[in-house]
Image (cartoon, rainbow, N blue to C red; front, side):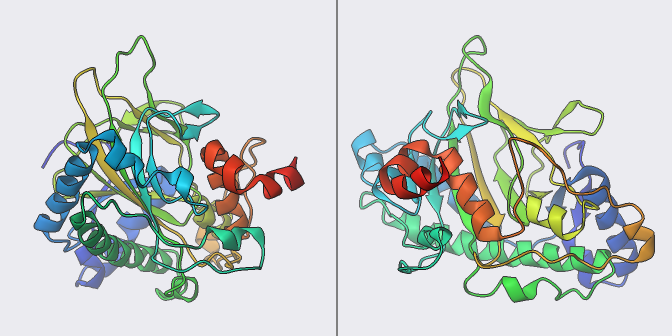
Length: 333
């Protein structure tokens, strides 16, 4: 096992004889750090290898085959994003990627955020991408929901507390990402400093590294790759639900050096778009340690998940927003 700087959690212990000790360790990792590795998840190694295999084949396709599913074609922000066209903190990120969500038909009418619902785009030049990605997505959802159930129990609640909002209408999202190497004199930003706006994020990273976590003392620490693990972090919806007992932690990705590529596949566990976060009732000893919800001028948090998600997509993909969401942008100007 590689040396780590973040807590390491074996989720198989949640159903084992030392459940109480496990929940104490998980609560510490989630409250004190907000980032942790998860092992013992049961995802087949061939599937974890498989998602990276199809990712490499996709990013090796000619640019015209990648652009066949460019996200500019999708009002739902699905598909391929070129290097430099997604923004974090107003600055272009140095990555190319595919965004994949649940396979659904558009839902007409309703609030603006309902327009996020729709189909994915799949490349005709690589049909196997769809099967592998959806199989990996199903496993990532299973593991993420198990971690969320364990967190509910660790916070003194029934483990099924959050299940209502994570039915077949939940709005999960995958990014299949390639970070091209770049020279540090150009910029180090693979992805700029940010927080995730769902409940939990799961990340499968390769052995290159580059993910960094911001600590409370103001330093950045490396989330070094641990073979066979996923990296988990707390999202803003859990911060709202727990009154800041759990807090979404800032993180970033530093570009690999020139001549080296990095692959990663993050999965974002989010509820139904119509979910409105309600305060979780914490035991008195935990409630005494709540820190309040973060108040950042450039990153206001909304208890309505759909609104929170829409703000994030419009901010991150300005080209797609201008093409498909001009009416909403005009209303909010």
